[in-house]
Image (cartoon, rainbow, N blue to C red; front, side):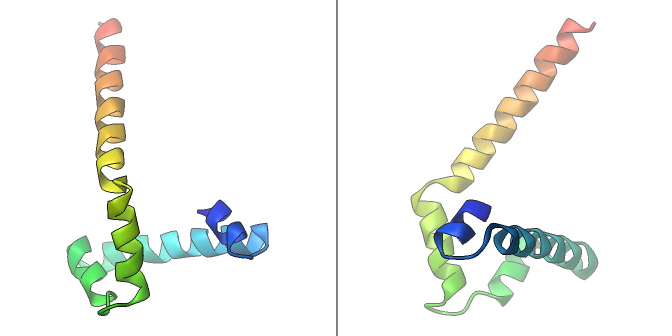
Length: 86
């Protein structure tokens, strides 16, 4: 994400700081609101807006599927490691 900021013309440190603060703010909002993540996303997604356009690109590139596959791979490897330590 920092690289994307740089590609869009931001200095590296600014891009990094924006990403970190966005992640922190999102995590705090998720924790403190008690709302489901989809509900929070829907609250900031306006018709034909920036968020929905970004989401479309993520879906076009199968980011959700890649994240699920990565988490499954990590789980499977953790099980293998645990079985070796028995």
